[in-house]
Image 1 (cartoon, rainbow, N blue to C red):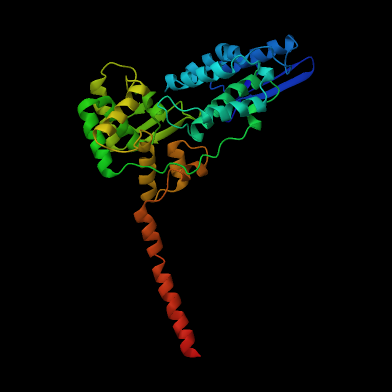
Image 2: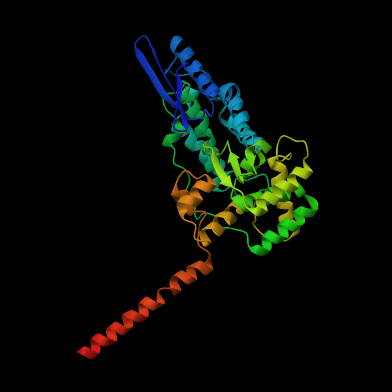
Length: 351
């Protein structure tokens, strides 16, 4: 096979009848998946359909290509992606891949924004943008398979989402949620403690196996992440204690946690309701961890590496300064202002 890995991405690179075919395979996380895409590309070349308009509908492509890939790569929250994929298939699935024009997607985007949610509330631009992102990923796979010349979603503008959500848990909120979870959902309580102590994503935590934990070196090896890049995160005492508790709860299991992502999310939401906390989500534990590291003086590059961010720009959205830190920063300027005023008085007296 002629697939190879460069950095964190797989590529196919082969020659047929003197013509070189070389392209990145962004959806491939393993060599086996990259080889499967390469085989599909070669078949399309031999059939004379490579780069030609495809007669396959979007629904057929989703069922035959995307879903098998998604079942492996979206293990943390299968119901979430399945419902979104079903919606896309119901609305756009009858259209041939070659007929999916930017104008069609633009019309669908605006119709989705105008539709109320199941609870009768207005749909947010961010929610529609997430669906666009999923559709773009599906069609990018079609491009990689040689069924489309280019991804039509690239010509569609995302909605401007307004201000980003700036929410992190307070000490009191953290204590209340953990107290309720300890009593009613102990596995979820341990997952929250790991998140607070490492900044790891929910899916990364629930995908852990005991073989990924090195207690002698006090490190966690994250082999599969959102960005596709493995990384190592150190353990602190609170995280070690959470894993020790978890070992007693799930003795004999290969996985560290035996509950699914939906169970942990539902448990966290119920704990928030029972404690009368407003607008608190599991992902806020990640905000909390990043904010704590930033307040302790940890540099943005280290935080980005620990959280698994691909850029420092993304890290800044998590490391927003605490009000107290902002006040200390501004008050530190008072000395400079006092010196400036003193120098001005001296200059005035010299005249």
